[in-house]
Image (cartoon, rainbow, N blue to C red; front, top):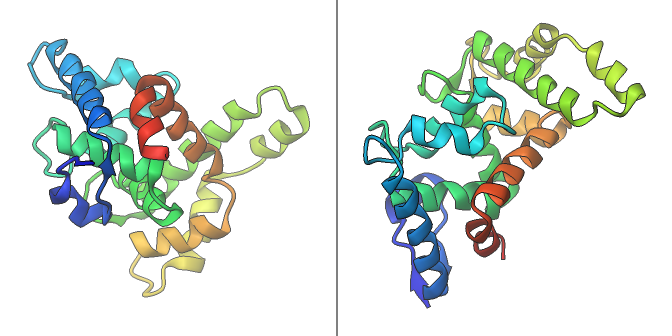
Length: 205
């Protein structure tokens, strides 16, 4: 058995992967191949963007990149890639929700402001709309939803200290009880499964 060596970001995800050495080697091969294709020589935003969008909406590409880029150095190293895939594909629901929270925390301060919550709701509704485009009744229901009103309800119900911000823990409480993030979670797994199939296979096993 081998270890991915992703303990630095495991402090954030509380996940340590133990997988077969052959799987680790395959993940490394895919990562280094991706890096070799990068104009900057690193897995940066420009390298990742065409791999994930579509299907990911373009306005969420930066957020997903930030969720991987734990040390905020504007590129994703191998450990960050392994731990990000783990949190998204293998982790329990709580860990997957923490990863989602990071995507919507655009200023990376560990809190969601009212504007960030509103933008999150717009994105989640957009993903739900796209996933139900052939379901006329459900689609009508989605079209009738107001992201600003939903954001207001989230803040009113889950901003425990009434400071105008949603913490990661408050976000998780809301997300566990609400179906709105479900399609987005499925979309994230779809992105990883299509673009990193072996990574998701080994991280989901």
